[in-house]
Image (cartoon, rainbow, N blue to C red; front, side, top):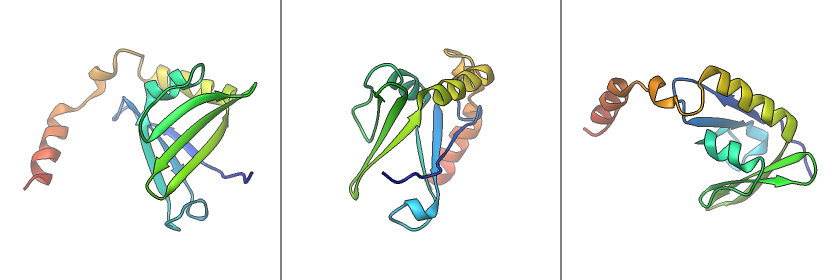
Length: 119
């Protein structure tokens, strides 16, 4: 199994999502790829299988969590150390507490972007 240096990020400006960045050598497109998916999905998947769509998360063995990405081109599975993932989720919760995500949304900006892109 190849080791790929992925980066997991959380930004309070998009409080419901986390992003996983893959470097170009690890992708079929030979360019960086970023997947955005629910922070809640990631947190739930640490202790029980979660997700039914393009992203699924589940415990894997004693100290790993598997994140599975599904696309028409195929499936990629990333194994993360569960302890590191829990620390990441605690830091994200420190930035935006669970259940308070709506307070961090900029609805005016989001609506403006939707209207601008809809023209």
